[in-house]
Length: 207
Image 1 (spheres, helix red, strand yellow):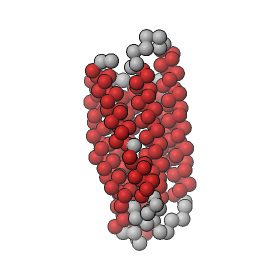
Image 2 (cartoon, rainbow, N blue to C red; image 1 turned 60 degrees about the vertical axis):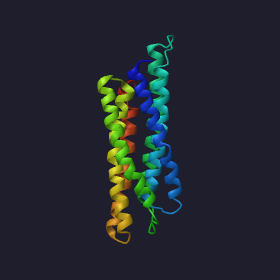
Image 3 (tube, rainbow, N blue to C red; image 1 turned 180 degrees about the vertical axis):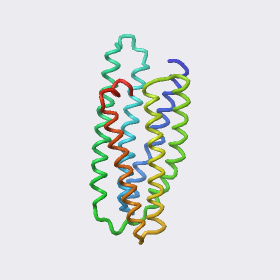
Image 4 (cartoon, rainbow, N blue to C red; image 1 turned 30 degrees about the horizontal axis):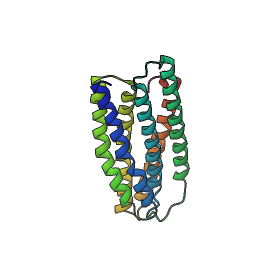
């Protein structure tokens, strides 16, 4: 495996390792706070973690040095990975849309979700630029997909931060309710649109 390929593999592994604690911590946080944005963020991060696992598996398979692997076999592997990831993201987005209409007067403590989202903005922005540099040096479909994924993750985390900060610091205002709903809508739109783009045939061989 070339140095550039090893660097890409290590970055993908780091993405998985750093993303793994998020859903666990948010899951615990949901025991103390029931904001729909926080629930949405938990489902979103779980779906993204699954996508990262699949991307890591595909990347390692493509660079395993298996001389018997045909071009068609590579494309089939990529299509299968994209189909599973895209379907999971669309399903999660649909759940988010349903949560927007859920009655949720007492949102509880959303501090945990806010901290995770704030850390996500910093970490995901770093990975966004890291993947962009790697892809500029050695253009590759899996890395290009991560550039788009982490760009979206950074923007969505910023939306989640704004929503949860409003809920935390102004919990009894109409702004908190509207910002919480807007945060959930942003997450839902991101998941559904991203899932559809991944499932589109023209992207099947590109991720």
